[in-house]
Image 1 (tube, rainbow, N blue to C red):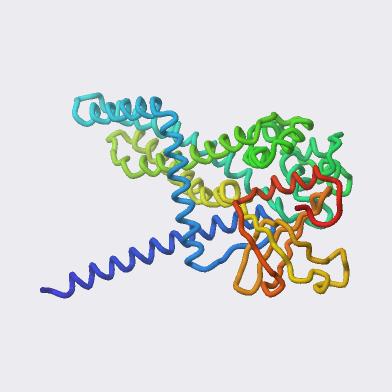
Image 2 (cartoon, rainbow, N blue to C red; image 1 turned 135 degrees about the vertical axis):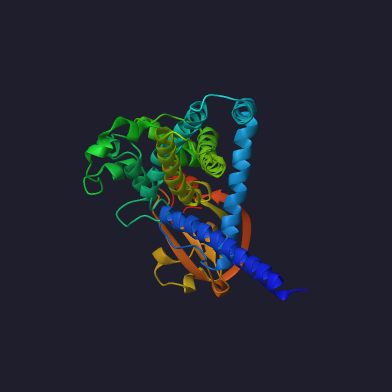
Length: 377
């Protein structure tokens, strides 16, 4: 047996495995980076194993979300498959004029290109500005930061009674409004940030309605957000399928040049949209959900002589944890200000983990609960 083919195949298998691992790690890095930007705090484990697991979760969630969209609209997808499949069979096995085949490809490429551009401009690009929604600066709260990022013009002119919108409307916090932000469609349409806030709490959705946004209940906003994400993933998959299957070379120079331009445009836009998919996943799908925990501290009064900074036993979202410490999200009652407290494990008597909790919803609850002192629980 010749050892060279065996060694060559083994080397190719090894390189393929390394490439797949690197791709998953890169995908996980992009998702973790987007998540940290939205939260406003570093919480991710940057090991290859953790990033690979995050990438796997992104792939699995994306697959099932796309499958859900396909199942709900099975008739439309079936008709599209039948029409496109029939057209491919006819073009390959029947004599048709030379211009029919490139025209048919253009009829597929142009709508696909428009779809990809729409995904980038209307869904993926607006997520870049969403930052600091869990841990905001000292001069603002996470919800006031979110309102300013979503709708600067309305936040400045708002006359709402809610504390966090008043904070957003104050002269010291209100940002300058550019001409780009004045456009109606950028402020009023179903942008991902609006849907993410509405999906966190019905109270937030009602407050957004009072300053000009359309009201949706929590489940409706969450479903719309996930469906929009699934359609973005579906557009990237269809673009990949188009690039792989498009192989015709028309004899006409006009059609050849036109298809070359369309294919290049689809490749570039699909590459941008595909790279942004894990980024959007980290910010919108796998972002504000944390495991809830009831923490009982060991003699809280001995931890700090300042009663304001004393640790208070209660329920907290767990941001991250290691063998030596655990980081908890602390939310002030009435104001909604947040901070991350890192507690050594030796200071904890007992910790009972519960179900996942949406941190934005918990912040909203603490804003509405203006009575009492200490941490919001």
